[in-house]
Image 1 (tube, rainbow, N blue to C red):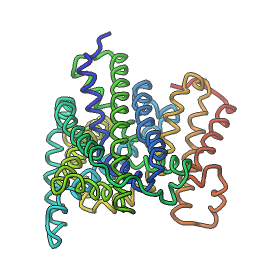
Image 2 (image 1 turned 90 degrees about the vertical axis):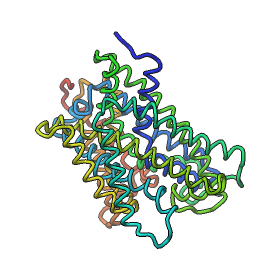
Image 3 (image 1 turned 60 degrees about the vertical axis):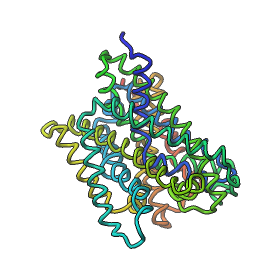
Image 4 (image 1 turned 45 degrees about the vertical axis):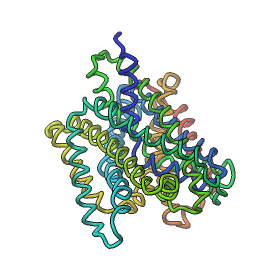
Length: 435
């Protein structure tokens, strides 16, 4: 069984890291740390579980099961198609792709133009150029390792390491006091875990396998077992890199919160501290980090969504799907970052628990494959609980008030016990062998 050379394995891992590491990965670690203050490393533990561990498990789960469609079919064929479409739309043109342009624009343009500049016009021009270049590279998805892994990933990591090193060589005032949401170790871990949803990487992990497999096959590894093995290796490399970079960004953000208390988000936390370290050059470094990271993810997402929807509806070519997603994303990006983030929170609070349970069940498959009802029962209970809990959070309807009594509901993890109840119910329902 042919395997990749170590150099190529590392390059594929770098490529997957580049596809993961974008807008949310830059915003949330420093934002979490700026608010968590002295509880930063407890918060990073929670973030590492949801934004590193689960994405790596997602890559492995999809690789081992033969694709997201096949994994979802263990619940039901209709669920497989519906959930996969929702997942790709969430990480694609509806949320994540527009966010790459909106976030990078906020760091690359407004800091360098006057207060009276026509920001809306600049945003439109920026998004046109950003998506045109991303589309140009995404039209050759099998070449992403040569472009993202060899070129953009090393530049991005180098810039982040330089910023982190500056914090070590020129330390600021230290970490600040934690905000109320983060003022105990348990609360900090839970809050870090929940904010990790916003990176969208667990959902993305379920989708990136298509493009990573193409890049592995383009390097001469075609046997299915070998492709799975190399995909798992790429996931582990990407996970290790994510953890290292998150830790650096968290330290930077925690120092930012200590130097300039109460930043509004991770973007503000970085904007506060980097110029303190580098002066006027800091804004340029920060802009470069955001543009490269967001560009890498945009290319990866356009490629992944294009490949999936071309397979789903081959009447439209991959090129046509990629162009369509780039155009739709460009239009949504001009709505602005705040609107995109506001819409993304409830959507991800519903989708993420379902994705987490599906991934975890896949690792118990050898023990539950003769209990086919476990998958649909667990997913149904998780989905219902997630929807109702999110409705309660958004509407405060009295009829939903009793949901606050669910275990872990005070940590916004009220779906966990319903998921376990679903597993138990499934074990006692009539069984048949599943895929």
